[in-house]
Amino acid sequence: MAREITIDITYSFTLGELSERAGVSPEFILELVDLGVLEPSVKPTKSKPMQFEARSLTRLQCARRLHRDLDVNLPGVAMCLDLLEEVKQLRSEVETLHQLMGFNQDKPSS
Image (cartoon, rainbow, N blue to C red; front, top):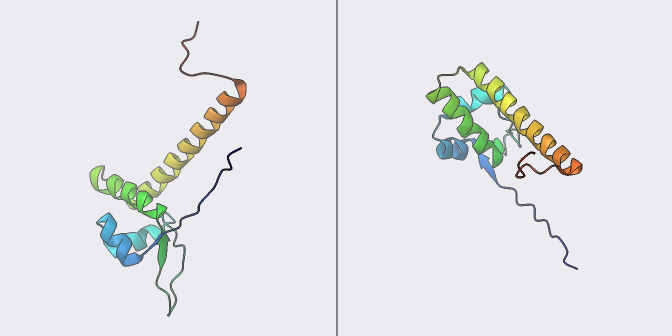
């Protein structure tokens, strides 16, 4: 019997690295932090810079697209991202319920 092995790989970015990778200014990121859109995994201290988990990059890129491409203001970006996250969670829950009920979406209904 094969054992499932889970490997937890955590990568983090400093504010500058995240800014560079996402193509936004550090000030833009800090505004998103103030609005609660992004949350640093490590708060800055004298000995440690602010750090963000790797998944923050995806959220930041989405925020950038909403702001730049759709001209959504930053509070609107925060709301959009929260709603997108909620939709994703609800879809996951519906999928789980479908699996529990033995519902097959690929099967044509009669």
